[in-house]
Image (cartoon, rainbow, N blue to C red; front, side, top):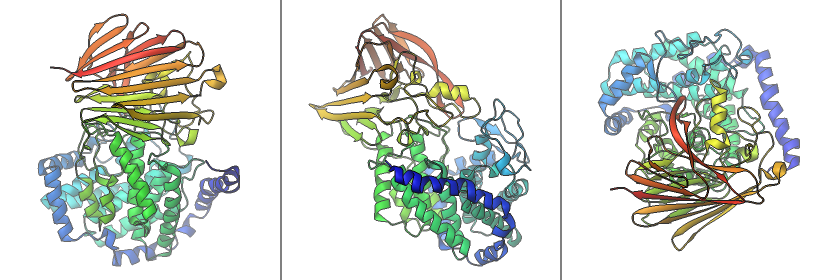
Length: 628
């Protein structure tokens, strides 16, 4: 916890400097900050740094791995979709971005963003209904151009290279520095710069001199912009990490220039600070979202790879713990549980899965630091996810600072959130999901989390999916665990939570207490969970205790496709896949339709079970067994 002296004597002045003063200086004297651009570009064009120098043997290795991990047919199919500007962004929906590429038009609503307005005058947080700027931002991360690069590497067709360069030049022409929606978010500027640089590396910078000069000049514009637009907010998170990735990669490219050296120094300093701030000692990142945890680790790992201190033992230890949480929380299906927000964002998207919540090792692997150049990074990122081996007996992994508990065996996976609501109680990307859990057993999801839906496109949907009743938890009266104050904040910083866990006689036991109702209602809530295992079934006993009698309700969200076979007053029995599920409660069980979001921008229906608490305690007994 930062001290008051740190907050008011050091941290907040930094916030004002980075978020107010430096951007103002950039806008007042833009030509002054770009004065060395031509000299710097010539310097780089004559000597490409080793990290971006892809040798023929690296290309040959990547070609082999692409065929092995993906197949030439998949590469060609994805490349064809990219060339037609019809591809997926963020979610599993395929969108048409028109030809020529409509860089300022929402492909769903048709809303046109102003392309000549100064970047700081664009309000992207309150767009017309049905519009989501993230669709255009994700397209501008150029994952789709990477598929065209892979196709070029596999099939060596010169027209592909020509097409790739023309697409980049079209973007440059349509998005001059400082104008339009694509310069309004520094995080996107950083990731985009990195991914354009990755395209040039995969092409081995073997393009026409005039085109190379145009693109390097554009990257230099990104670099100067990022130096003046660090998203150093009161509670820095993945946005700052995206800035640092751009600074680190571009700083490495322009390392022989003064602006490049400055960028590397900024990135190195902030990366050390953010690794210790954003990643708890147990490896969980402080945004309280498993999806964003994955993104943050990709951003920090890649940014460090470009920095001189990439082999720092302290950094390696921090990232190792973060990877362990990612692998521990992964379901046996190779998915990340949808705890907290999930916008499906990635730095590099090399797999072709329509479900972007499917994991892959790639950039979250400790092998990243052994890569010598960008081609080797892509080769690593193309590897499919290897599901962690689970023991036959129940195992318990506790992440006390992050507030997660994972209980698993070879056929069962249970992940429980009993921590704060993100960023040390500030909010961030956490949901009102204290005490909520996601369960996978015998090859099927059983109990699910709500997901995210979207952000600005439909704020009401977002709020409904992060509220208490959208999770497998307990709600007292009509009140939320914490009240929201906008898209990514809660009204009062919430930090009071405790939990303990243990394995006893083969049973996993967790006890957690939540105090967020205490000030408003004088009620504390304790959730006691016991998980037991036998050869044919798994039992979950959920015992909720209130410190005093009050109106309360518990919820269980059944996975989509769950078939209800019996619904009695105190018992519900059903099946999904090979799993038979019996739920027994101490008060009448109700069953209703509900909505969840399996991936960003996508909603689907499922069933929710709820029961009212009579008195000060309530017991749920859940038995999951493998069907025949």
